Length: 202
Image (cartoon, rainbow, N blue to C red):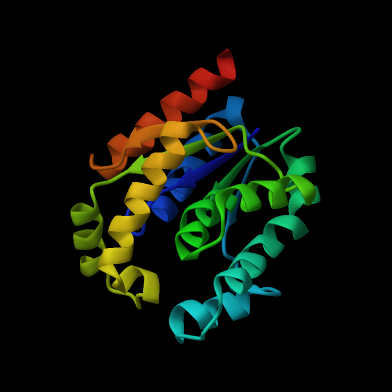
């Protein structure tokens, strides 16, 4: 199967994706697993995305959309093959684009039509870490690493929270599962794992 860990900046997507992979690999019944992370700054258009986020490179909403989605299109065959026999866990995905780039001005329906036309792999579920913006902002402030333009923009973080709530409520594009991301790291990981296990036994 193919699942995505999603949430606003500071929600802990990267931490939870890594924790979930570790927990799954400790359980023989859930092995093998693959972790993928977006955007991937080390290849192709990822370098341009990194310049946009960390070096304030100017990109239009359309340019942002095309750069981000190009990685999903390039990886669609890999994801399609791996999900047949593995659990593929993505730290962010096209669902992030449905939030961020629609806030930049890309029409939601156009984005959905694009995904269909270019056959972007649709995940079985998106686990949305619902974290209060104030909590997420505090978490980001406590991290000892460089912050990109999105992570510094507290107003935008609050806007993304509202946009994600809409996507979850309307179940846009795929199945969204809301997880309480305000809890401790271990509690959140256990909750995601339990939901994942439950979905596999149905």
